[in-house]
Image (cartoon, rainbow, N blue to C red):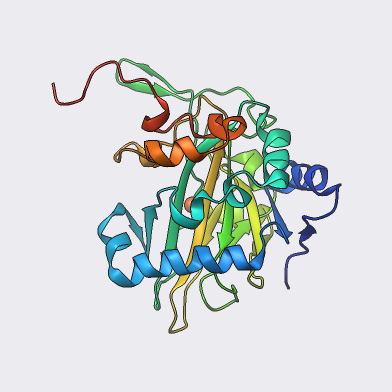
Length: 280
Ligand SMILES: [Fe+2]
């Protein structure tokens, strides 16, 4: 059954979306971006996919027939209707507080024949202690913590049941930071699985802690999506520790970002004052 999507054009959209993410760990939206902009973003990603450049610059993480690549904020991705979409920033403020910033922008391309990904959460935070040889997990209740990172997934095509939709276990974000996180069977037993299908123009946000996975792409076409991550300013995604920069914008492009939006990019090297050059 298709997920009920919140109309992004309505004034109540930000409040409804943030409440849904807090309750369910995700929310679907439609009408956040103009279709003409989505088509330009798609053309840019498909150009990089077809030339092989994205694959060459892909992350080591390459799971179950789908690959991920960090995208630079250039060309159509520098359109403020994308990165500074007013409704999107309102939603992120409601979820992540006033000083949130962009964590990363990736594309994930599920190739024809991609198979089911393992169930996982993105970037868990842990408060373990190491006592000699013994690791001790923090046993306190972290289930009420607000989100620290939220991904906006923007499909660049229609997503159907058979071309690699994302499955999300509704409400499972509350269990992810337990001292002993639940296994796949417990998650599947306790939380309903929802499949994120929808026409081009529908997107969804999810809390980093919600259990999810990519489903198989049984069609002959690649399924490209954008994973646009926003974080509280102190969070760093452990999955991106191996690459640099994980947020890519050149100095010239950053200069074209309106001053009021420049803080969104403060994790990018171009917005930082270099103290030492890294050739030493
Ligand atoms: Fe994931």
